[in-house]
Amino acid sequence: PITFAELEQLLKVCTGKREHLYLQILCVFETGCRTSEYKAIRKRDLNIETQFCWVNISKQKKNVKQRPPRRVYFSKRLIDALIADGFH
Image (tube, rainbow, N blue to C red; front, side, top):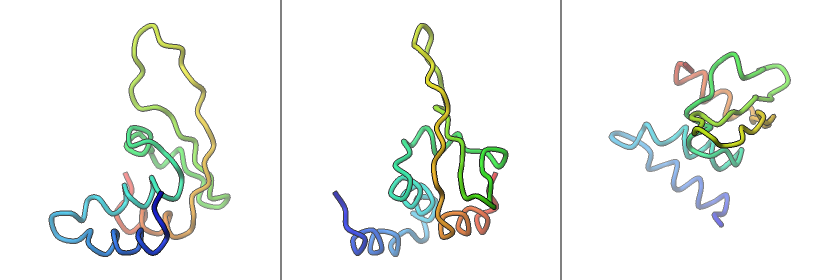
C-alpha cells in the first residue's frame, strides 16, 4: 500500500522525461483502474458533471468471457489533470 504523502512525493517527481507517468499514476491510485483500462479511457466514457467514467478492458482475448464495463468515480483533481493534458 501507498500513503497519500507517498503519492504526492511520487507525483512531484513526474516531470521532464517522467511527465507522461503523472496521469497514469494518479488515475491508477485514485480509481483502482488497471493500466490497460486507463489507456482505453476516451472522452465519451467520462461524464464530467457526475464525475463517473465507464471503464472497459482495452484488449479482449479470444475465448475469454468478456466483462461488462464498470462505473468508476473520477475526482475533480483527476478530471482537471485529464483536461489540462488535452484528454484524448
